[in-house]
Length: 456
Image (tube, rainbow, N blue to C red):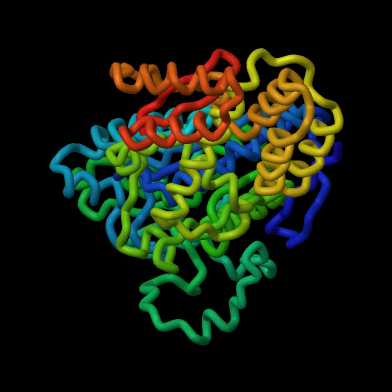
């Protein structure tokens, strides 16, 4: 089935054809590892995971590359402020190298908790300094750079279509600028290489043809994506906040050096919001650990993200999260009661494929899953089909089992009475006994293996 994705560059739904038939090169902008990721960040990586799983469901072999930004990401998009790694070092009292290692590991652990597949290739900016210097040197030879007191900059005036990805009004930006751009020639120009100032003060710095310093944020992704996927690959994705600056600058660099826009498709996930604002700006910093501390399964957050299309902003509230957790629990119980899987239903599989092929329409696909579970199909067919769906959902339905609880004597007696009532078809008595079990804190579930008790 043809897969259609919304390409931010063309502002259109386009049918995906691999540059190399049957294969997809996928680059995802990874984290800047100066602190823990919050769940707004993680929504983007869930979107990338749904994308990758959909590509694989559609029969593509995916080469998935994700970067780790461990140097060069400044606190301001205007190439001013501190390097985020150096700032994180000051905050923690540990070296930038130490915190990079710590937060990279924490990020990978978060991905595992959310059942996000690890990329085939992790690439660290600090491991690709030579490629970045080579890239900048080539841009210099082609006449796209200039030098200031604090670094080497890309001259965006050399490109008539600079900022096309974001549909930037360059003339309006320039005439309406209200920020001090220092020695930059134009507001949209950006740093390729920043000078250290006093060599030896920074923890992360390297020698270059232009002096001791460190790379700019944007050159990292251009150099690493080209190194691992080539000058022109299939899909580049990230959060919607990357469109006006980071990804526009990546495209500018690739166009200047290679004559391509780097990727055939540019895909962007929308923000997670809290109190009507982007989570990173709302004053609310919710980590995955925050959910764990509250006793919430991280996969409940994954389920919540399935309920909203990746290009639509999702408002995070306690009620929404609890509703998602309840929905996931209900789905798990229904699936476990189905017993052993049989043969999947081809019609449902075709309908599922059609939904996810429409620009990853996970909310519609999730609704289809509920329709399937409520259908009159045989249990084994439903089980096999929902497990095929879950190859894309990633909810680990095949692994889930109800928690084993220690059953107090009073509950055992209630369960025995209820079993007799059910055998004698005294349904109202069976319902009354289930309510009594709830009153003492237990839910009774009827499964193919009999009654099962779980703590409420």
